[in-house]
Image (cartoon, rainbow, N blue to C red; front, side, top):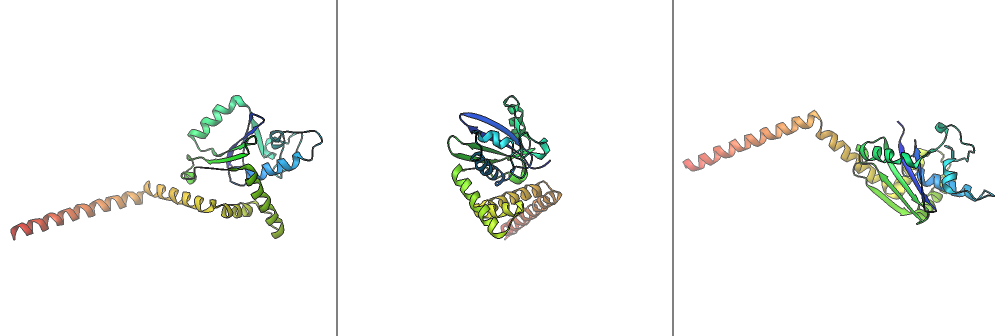
Length: 214
């Protein structure tokens, strides 16, 4: 299943849509955008960010022509197919996040799909794109200094530095609470609580009767 996401890049007044198989996390979108902007400066002929983005492999290397889709970071979604992708995002959980880069307005937004139980309470977050890219640049400098190359470690550091770690843990806690409410144990606890209430009512009635007799 991967951890799939929908990425949208608004550039020059146009929307470009991408399906990303392993991109539903807070770091991947900004990291890939940082790589795309770095690469853009190396071309003798101007290339759009959306074009470069489409040609990034999993190592952030520009591949033209593209390799097989399974070897590329993302795949372009034809605009005519976006209604189906939007429907899938709204009704199911196969796409866990949605990212929007607005290059024209210097804005980045990431949204966690509430259909995913582990993201139920996460909502969405926005940041100035240049600030987000600066944070990634600092993270990469820190990683180089410490010799960190593992992506999961980088993601953990990023979550901690941005405060997302606490929000994600809180959301997972809510998921566990929901799972408990639907569990046999919760049903047993509810029945036990009802019996206690019934017993307490009986005791209250007996006490009231005794008081009247006196």
